[in-house]
Image (cartoon, rainbow, N blue to C red; front, side, top):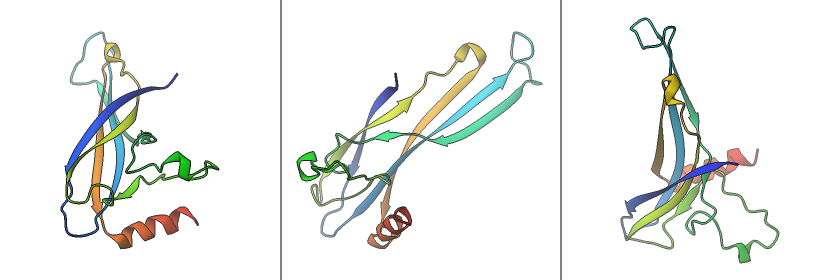
Length: 133
């Protein structure tokens, strides 16, 4: 069974023009290999970074109304959206992050981050062109 963390990302959309956004998530994990039972300066450290699954199926800015997609073929893998529904207001995005509990007994720690980027209309066209290649 997959576990999720639900996160709310609050942002202010500047009014008066069309704005475009892209949201993504990543996780940095640190694992300290302990040769003895306790940490020592000689312990090796492994750091990994990876993208996280970002569930946004219930978020109206990112996922379409399912009634408008009767075949279930719409996909927004890049999580790109416009401010069409919120123009000039503050908004809370509701997102789900895949979650795996770190093994702190073995000195494993992780930090998840959500990245909300303001992008241009041109960069949204580039994203969609790459997706369809």
